[in-house]
Image (tube, rainbow, N blue to C red; front, side, top):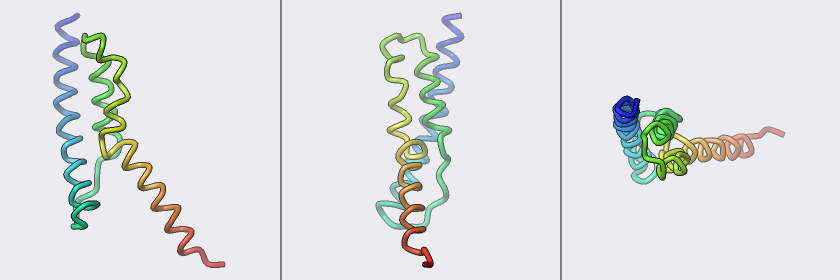
Length: 96
């Protein structure tokens, strides 16, 4: 069972690191450089990395399961910025 946790955790973590990397490239291009960039993938990278943290048999890593959700642009940061932008846009374009 321990071997399966290592395999599953490593595969899912590798997948999530790739997704988080793509999301960070999109962040860099669209927010920092103000260039056209494809859309980001919400929640998949952060959630899969959080699950990998819990699946890997490294007990001290389990308490940090929430960290990928903060570090991945497609998770908490991207969602918060999107919500703020939508609220700002609606307030700015409100017709009274």
